[in-house]
Length: 428
Ligand code: CMC
Image 1 (spheres, helix red, strand yellow):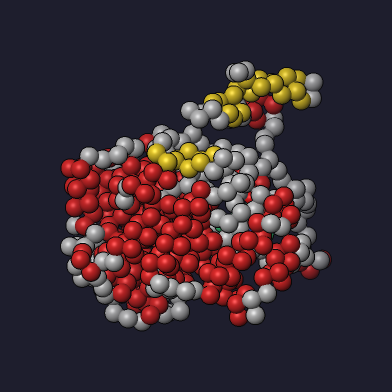
Image 2: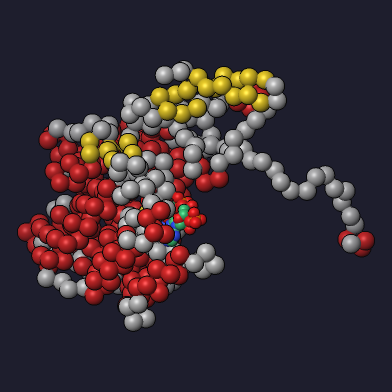
């Protein structure tokens, strides 16, 4: 393979180095293009731009492959658990039993948050969306751990922040729900595992491991694993770019939560259920919504369909669809919204508009159905996504800092007015 590509422009020829990844992905390294030729590249939405070299997650959208640190999500979601996957993403290797035990122990000893966080929480109106509350509370942790403001401290201190974030996010997430319900907050129960403790802080139960329904525990753990990382997506890129200014990990993750919130990203799981309920309430006419989605004059989109990188299928959706079937079957739930989802999927998958654009159900199409079955309220769905995505954000931030990446600062092609003289207000 050639080591470089040639660019011809204005009578000159430029060599652009070609970079190759471990899975044979190839890229043009254009970092010196402007100084050589005066040209920059233009790529709205970064559809064809690599922002970094990363060793965390491999994704092949054409073949539906997703691997964390080389391990397939099919393997991890059936054989591992969320804390082990978190360790793998953040530190790069699968832990031994002793290492995983001490990681879990350390996390469970940091689940409490400072009592003053409660007064911040009390300041939010109960109608506040839990994602906004969560993002604010994560940012507020900088006030309780001011040393974390300096991301250039020792690896040990940075690791303290990493452990605190993993430990406290379920507490803050459950508390944002309690604020929504205007119920008193529940304190963590460190005798429970990670997901059990979260359910306890949300619903008061379980209070012991034996009360955790294994079906619920497995489904939740699987969902968290499937959401744990997804390479350079909108929120991960946000975390990296905020962190690239040497902002703290708490501030960077808080920004990541805000980026995830939007309905085109993590907020799609809430939007899917709202759309399905809307279809049901309007009499279940699926074709009407399919036609709306196809109408270019109508901004409506089929939520839970399509993905920037998956153009054949989303491997996460395949696993989650099976998990949704299992959970609903085992819990004996007959959800009319699920029937609508199945019919909608069937119609869309056979429609030329969706087929020709590679629009398939994505991870968020089914995750909401499971969350509903588990009794998690709709506006907490994206918070669940954030809980799952946290180790990915941490791993992306840590990699970016360890590689000492420069501040993220894209260029632009200016298309505004040329120079104009200021006109006094009396003469306009
Ligand atoms: N319904 C109808 N048409 C769609 C949809 C949809 N859900 N998604 C894309 N299209 C059309 C779009 O109108 C465009 O058509 P045309 O070529 O005729 O102009 C074409 O498909 C390409 O769309 P795009 O917006 O250029 O694609 P993108 O890569 O910029 O957007 C997306 C990807 C996920 C934002 C988009 O598919 C979408 O809005 N989907 C619905 C929201 C959703 O489910 N998001 C969750 C993504 S999975 C969770 C995560 O990882 O964040």
